[in-house]
Length: 169
Figure 1 (spheres, rainbow, N blue to C red):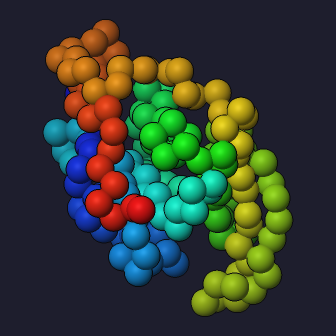
Figure 2 (figure 1 turned 135 degrees about the vertical axis):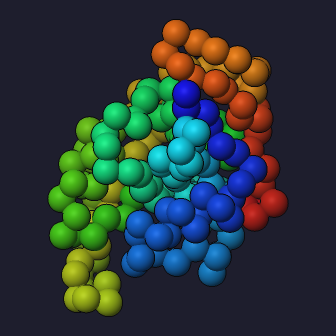
């Protein structure tokens, strides 16, 4: 059974950072959302560099693609667009990571540019963005904090209606 993990920012951010060594969490305010099974965390999203208009989303997951579910995506996008009121979210992807680039394109992100030779290994960083009106996941799995003990697809939902913002202004 999968469930959404909120209010565990540091634990989720450490897990994501262990899979994305080029990004450093903790140097700026962040909030995180995870997806867990009995075996542990299987996916995580870290939100950072919040500007009231935009926030960056960093996603990491286990290699098995079956973790992905529209319910989790709905929660991941409701936080920046509905709870924070952002107009857009930004994804920064190492140019060498074609898997992450394809994933973001499938989610609906649009290519916006390239930051050349910015990574320690000399790689470029690709800039992708999604506007609120482009997000197709905002109404998916909408529960807004109501506990749901079991569902047909095996989800248990325990996310509060508003994620804490103790690290994000």
